[in-house]
Image 1 (spheres, rainbow, N blue to C red):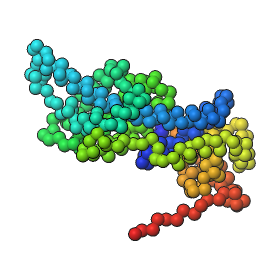
Image 2 (cartoon, rainbow, N blue to C red):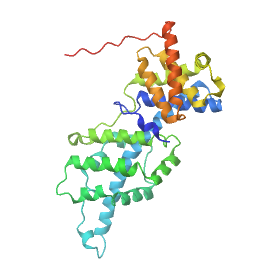
Image 3 (cartoon, rainbow, N blue to C red):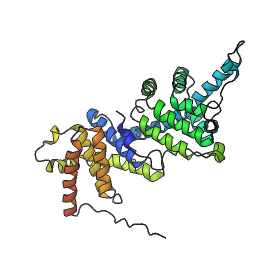
Image 4 (tube, rainbow, N blue to C red):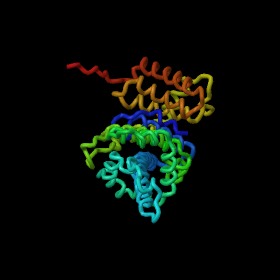
Length: 328
């Protein structure tokens, strides 16, 4: 369900691996319904990118909200008429976590949350549930009982919380699925980006600490649009290529996802001369391992390899020569 986590972080939030995945999934949905224009599909693709970035910010805000809940719990204990010894002498290490204090003041996060109306205000029961679960974990207890605590320790505890508690919580997963149909397949991917973000946080940068951008540059956005359009516009040509290299299979009997994966792969192979053939093939074959049947990757790899060999022989696959960087 959430195998998109196999895609790795490359500087920006929406990298080319994620673009390939979303193009395939949108085309899969399109061919099942076949009731949308190319323009509407392009808008849907861009919207799905925006929702992925929303989730990234939403989960960062969750860390802030959990910490605020723990702070308020301490204040409520201190305000009691007859507080217990523990309530009179609270351990404030988690509540005063320096990484979270910095994140709470982050100008980029706060601006995005305000502009896109992202908030946990109406979902405090989930915040409370997660806070209580965190407080029962061994890694939380070790963090609270340690003799010393550095800024790096403050970051490390939250990396563990995201990977060991938030990633595995069924209630949170159900909530995210209810909030957006786009989010359920993105959870693990976004959590991997959050882990990278926490690692890059620098205490000296304060509220100006940059978060991950949605796109590295406009080239990736154009790549996404062109890949989608090319795959649709040249559908018949690509289908014919696939049919010619699957002698024992009728095209209509192939697994639907396999057909879409190969169609998008051919669009990339024939449209983007600067992307090496092996990069394209590896990405789509790897993708098929997680979104198609068990043996699809072998089938797809074999068919695409034959097509590539044919295109090279006919001089229809022209790739630019990428020279290695010179060492200084």
